[in-house]
Length: 220
Image (tube, rainbow, N blue to C red; front, side, top):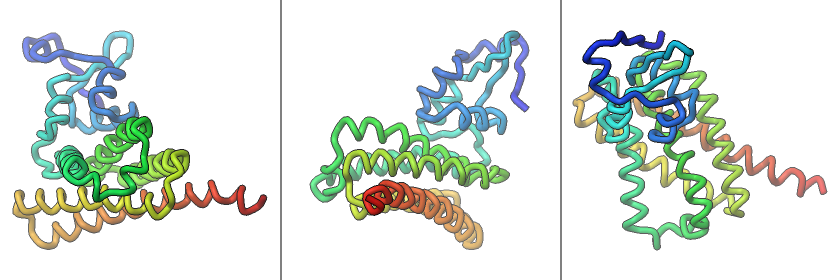
């Protein structure tokens, strides 16, 4: 249930922003942000007219990688992975031919999808997450990725290479967080399995999109 705050001094200690403003700040879609609010990761309340308002302070903490649920070590995974991926791209673009093959306009269209996906990964890794629903949403992101890459005429080989580059950033970030939180081996293996399962589904969705794009040409 969404938290409802009374008119106390604590409720006025943060700025409350609309659903649209919050989604723009985080780079996620509305359904994802609603789930985060319902799970208590960010503070929110409903106005008398039924509209949601979100704590800007909590949202900026998520963007900074601090996360709203301190007892979940993987709430910061997405932001950590994004930082790592951006750093690797800025340091070695010449070593990434697939990146050079994507126009700047296309990169701008892909960035919100990347933020949306890493947000899903962070949520998927938390305990009690509705993982079946999140896998469906991750596959949807994979299909959107595929459509954008097909539109930019990126080969399927380059598309797979681009995704493995992205996935390596997630894997390395997950290992870093596991070490920082001193997770037992059994829990670290479980985390690795969860992350691999989600990433595999996204990659399959990308491949399916390429197959769908090739089908008309084959039939013709």
